[in-house]
Amino acid sequence: QVQLVESGGGLVQAGGSLRLSCAASGTIYRIIVMGWYRQAPGKQRELVATITSGGSTNYGDSVKGRFTISRDNAKNTVYLQMDSLKAEDTAVYFCNLIRSVAPNNYWGQGTQVTVSS
Image (cartoon, rainbow, N blue to C red; front, side):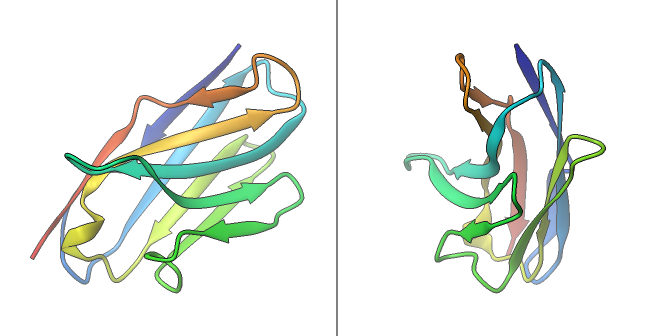
């Protein structure tokens, strides 16, 4: 099993920055990709950013140029640097891990990000 623990959420003013962290522990091997998704009230969960084990990144259109995903393989941790935050970035942010062995899809408990306008 894999456990994901997110941290770094909070309240910030529009235009500000936050950095989220997601630490993975447990049976960590054969990881394919880690990433962040978010869900705002009344909306579906959406992609924020992902990063593969090889370092390739992918971003949702709404965060391109403002958010940066990175990972520290030695610490089994993935980060999300969020800059130029907007009110519409307000959501619960979830860490996700996918590996090539079953069970292969894990989610963290989520961390709240609130951006005041």
